[in-house]
Image (tube, rainbow, N blue to C red; front, side, top):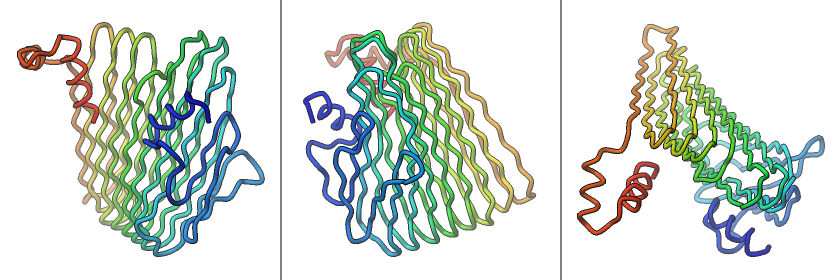
Length: 305
């Protein structure tokens, strides 16, 4: 990998070198490096672009890294990745995509990730998106995540758009089985004339199912974010969603809550707040020696952590 690809790999997956364990690194539309382990097998799809990640029952304390890097202008791809997580597993999956576009053609990555998580498994999923480049071509990302949680399974999702993506349409759909839980933290930063749409749709289908969705956004410049959180309580369940956003300059954020209960024992809550950075926060940090710009950056960094 060249220096640009190495830098982006650090941004989206916090990797300085090839990781320990299972991994598949995709660069400019091709698999650049791959490794399977005794418990985690990575196999190329034969009918379309993408991979199957098969994790054996009882796999504990193992990780799988599947970052994507695009460093050439004009690369456009759609990739399908399916995760089959066996019973009673405890694993971490690190994804993410970085695009560096210094040319005049749009570069685009559409990633469709589907999770089949079996009984009592625990998955921690980390996905970061990052863009950079001085060219006129856009950096486009459209991630779709489909989650199917079996009985007693838990999925913790930490998804974020760090910076530099011109346009994105982020879709997350989850079906939660009996006693299963989804915990999701989604963070988006936009600037200039960038746009971001995010839809998070959760069906609480099993008795004792739970979800806790936390969405945070910062819209700077003249950027716009449209966030929809849609929770359906179809059983004895509990669902919570919180959407907190900061607007700066001419930024626009639209947060739309949707709650639907079809069971008398469904308990659903949605909270939302949109506002600017409080002046006293900036003043306090400036008294510690920071400039106004540095103070704003620190507040945003903490808010999106």
